[in-house]
Image (cartoon, rainbow, N blue to C red; front, side):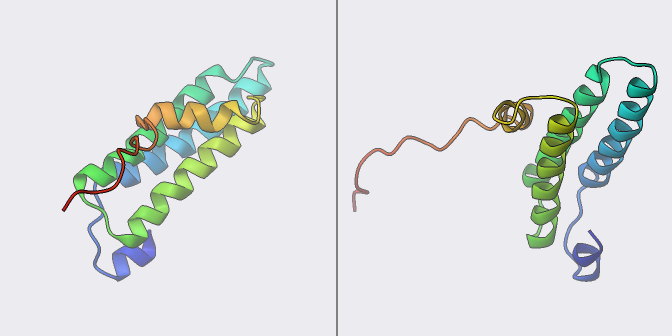
Length: 112
């Protein structure tokens, strides 16, 4: 994020909010584990952080900001895995949280 700021890129409010939400999920995970509880709330908060970061594309983000968005998604995936979510399920949950529907279907060659 510092590179984005140093380069004068736009930094939508949702981006630092997503980082704060993600940080809160780590603290919540620690608390849930300390109680011996399944870290469900931490997972939910982490996914909210991912969803918040995805808004940056709609609000306008530069190259470095886009890298931060990708890092948030990767970190959330790793956090989900650390809490016991299956390997293949973690990225699916992240994609669902950010509203990713997959690549558009190919419709054949472009017409000119």
